[in-house]
Length: 315
Image (tube, rainbow, N blue to C red):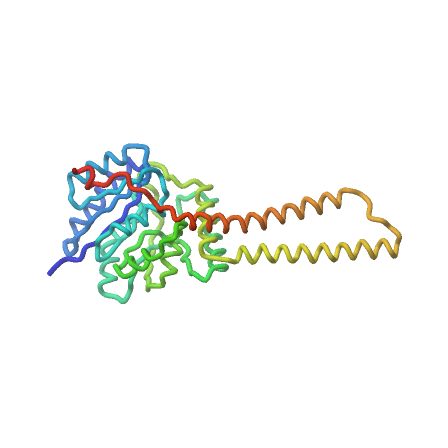
């Protein structure tokens, strides 16, 4: 009887310290799980350190290791998409190389898919110990916000770390959009998902490539990708501002007619001008974000560009 094949997608960006540690840990899992075969798909996202050299060496020594190296840094979302496109497994997992996604959960995730009626087993953290408080604060309220304004349910604390059936992977690949937000895409396709909870695990080595500003921009992309509510808010602000302007105009006109007191001073005028200008710029910024995303989609540029794969290196 032919064994199931599990493809594991591992995005990497400047992870020369973590790749050997990750491989050592996942090797133990692969060797201890004899009922399935594995393939490791490392996606080198334009690393500038020795990550690619290490991946070349691993691919030479272990036939289960494959790598796909981008021509530059395209981002984690592009790396996940590339991995999904090249994965050949009956089941496909997405994992971070920093070992914050516990590899030891993989066997139980596989058993769940084989024995229960699920298409995906995801993971979520029950706490954020070791993470900067400001990042935890904004992450918590980001999930609350996006779940209020979006029809797509995005689980608080959910990781990209998950194991999916081939049917679900094929569905995700049908979403070929350039501006990708995988947490939303995984939920939007609508397959049955079970979540395994675990306590937060800190990085074993190296530094994260995610800055606070990078995460903030990523969260904005997620909101724009899965909600039109910001556009409605911009329209609402414009309408309310217009009503306030009419009421103020009536107030000043009536006061002048009754009390003969002309509106004096320039402070209130400047406040009004600056306030209106700020609201206009806010609304233009919201609309501009959607137009910018649309602009990128219409260009039909590739999500990523491959520069080298393990097959190229072996030749």
